[in-house]
Every structure is written in C-alpha cells, then in structure tokens.
Length: 498
Image 1: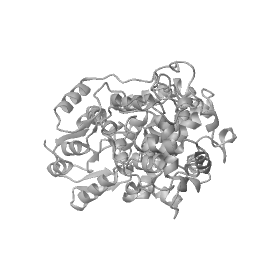
Image 2: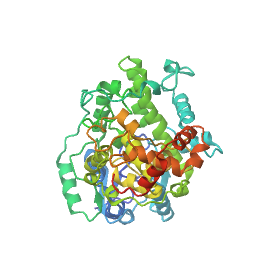
Image 3: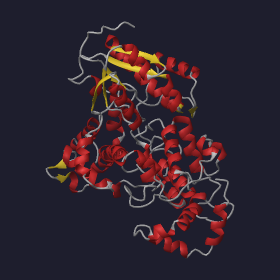
Image 4: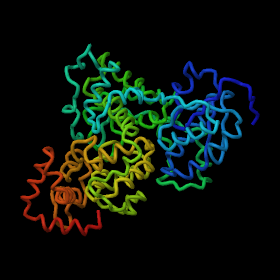
C-alpha cells in the first residue's frame, strides 16, 4: 500500500467501536484519511462471543466500504505493526478502555500517534463529570440523572421535569401480560450481505477462542442501519417499552426493547441523538411520558453513569470483593451450557446468551447476576464473563454493572443494597416458572427453587451486613423466623444441581 508522506492533515485512526459519523465526519475530520486496523492479536487475545466478533468486523468493513478511497484498511498482526508500516503519525480519539488508552499514549510517546483527542461518543465529557463528581467517593444514579436532564435540557419544562416528576418507575413495573408475546411490531432486523459472508468465513478460519454460537446478524453495524433501528423503535415499540421493561417473556425475547445497545456501543448513534428522538415522540404526543422517561433514563442516565464511573473508580475497581465471594464460575455457566441446568429461568437465559449474545437487563441482573451473587461467584471472573459473553459487552461496560450494581462487591459505592430475590420475584415478573421442575414457593426439598433457597442462604451468610442496612434489615428479621433455616443452609451448602 503506497502512502503519500506529505499529505495532511494526519490520518484519523478509528477503533472498531468508534464507527459513527460524529467520529469521522465532523468538521475537524472531514478532510482526513481514515485508518482502520484489524488486529489479529487483539481478536485472539480478547476472544469473546463469536457474534460480537462478527459485529465488530462487519462494522469496520462496512465503514471501509462506505468511505471508499478515503480509508486505508489494514489487516495486521497488531496495531503497532500497521501504524509503523503506515509511515505517518495518526490522530485518534481516546479509546474506551484503560488498557487501550495506555497503549495509545505509549504509541504517542513513540511518535506513531500525533494527538489523542477526547472521546466524542458520550453526552457528558470526562472533564465535566470530574467537575460534577468533585471529591465524592460514592454515587447514586438519581442525582446524576437529574443533573444530566438539566444540563442537556431533556424532558424539561424550564427548570422543572416534564410531567411534574423525574421518575415514572411506578408505571414501568408491570408483570408480563397473560399471553405468549406482546404482539407488537417486530424490531428492525438487518439483511446480511457479501461483507457478512466474508466475515463469517474469516472467523471460521481464525485461531481465536470464541464462546457462544454463530448465528444471523441481529444488530445494526452501519450508520444507516442504526438509524433504521432507532426509527423503528421510536415509531412502533417505544410506546409499550416502559410498562413492561422489567418483565421477561419466554417466547418474546425482544419484547419492546430497543436493541440499540450494540450500535450505541459501536458509536454508530450518539446518545443525545437517541434521547432527543424519544423526547420528540413525547412532545408530539406519539408516546406517553412514562415509556419515554424509562428509556431516556437508561441512555442519558445509566449508560453515561457507567461510562464515567468506569474511569472515575480506576483500575483497582474490578478487584473489589467486599462480600468475600471467591467461588469459581462452574463449567456449565462459563461454557453457556443451558442444557446442564434444570431451573427454567436460568437455562433459558443462558441459552439466550449462547445463541445471540444478548438478553435484556432484567435477565442479566435478576437471573444471571442474582444467581452469581447468591452462590458467591468471584466478581472479577464474573465481570470478565459478562464482557466476553455479551455482544454489547466492552471493557468499560461491565465493571460498574457487575462489581457495583449486580454483585455489591464495592460495598455500596454506587448501589444502596444488593440486588437479589427469591423465586417469587421471577414468578411474578416472568412466565418462566411455568412448567419448571422447581417450585418458587418452596425453599427446602428436591423441588425447592434454587433462587428461593439461595436468597435465604445469601441472607444467612451476610446477615450482619444486611441487618445494618435499613433497606435490607427486614429480610434478616424474616430469615431468623424461618423454622427450617438449618435444613435450608445445609441443603444449599451442598447444592450441585440448578
């Protein structure tokens, strides 16, 4: 590949999760060449779900096809190899992980990178978050979310929240309806092309340790696809999103969820573009405010919160283990062996991860996460498992979600209590307890639900911590009144089947 060494300005090097037009087509970059690099060593090192690897490669190759002569596309053993051969320093936006950021700054020291620019794919800059955070060492989503709404004037009427409230959660917690699906319009689905076919062939030949099954591409990987997915969600699915956002339906894995986490995490959509589309639907009276607020909270609130706390808490955060959880992940869990599990909720959730690399936030938190919390799985290993196993799982996404929200391993830095429950919650909020061999009402015996029994076992092991928290103290009092507690503890300490 011939390169003109006198051409200017410096080329823009784009990582595989920086594919959006706000990254490469801004006024600052409109005249730059673009450099895209497939690093064989990065894929071999990271591994992860087979379908995530497909999405990354497909997105990069589709962008190269879209940019045409503007792009230089390299397939190399490593990033440094390609940049050295390129023969010109590049500019690059701050990567989305600490490891990649350190690597990019080393390349800058070596003269291969001319400038490291701020990451443009989040609404709030890291410097503005640092100013907002100040010297605080613990954080709550609600305070951050309200500040985000004010700062970006989203769902605001002057200085007051639209609809008179910040939070419509009480309207967004319905159990699933008494039918097999929501019966709404399907999500937007991509159509695979020759690029996808070549990606699949290349992955078949790649020497990398992937998990999960191959399958049809389910998520947007181009700007136009992402816009179509967003439009379909806003026009046909957002109206029913909020009401059932916390429910699980066995025959309807998408329900009303947007399926935008992948294009958002590939930077194909900017978060403000997404939340403004939802807000516009409210202003035009096309959807109710409760549905839109619940969705906007996920994007402008939680997603941004997770991004900034990833950087704020630092590299040692994933080593947090305040509950002393050290159990290794079982082989069936690590290998996504859904058939090895009897509990229907756990089996079907694992099957969803295996077959498509995606389940929505409640199976993640209240099935997978709750199970891991009850069983005391090592939180660092669990964080890596979530990163590797989910198609939207990147280094920045999982630490706060798992260490903080799911496993309470940070001792409460960003959540006020552990999130776990007995089988009654899963029975109420899903249809997965039907036809299950376990009974969510039973805590002792061969048909005792492992979530119901596991909840009380977890409460027993951590009763001192839970008893001192006003949000969980009642659970400890209830546990101490159980007449079969000794038998339950003995049962759960030796449980091998789930």
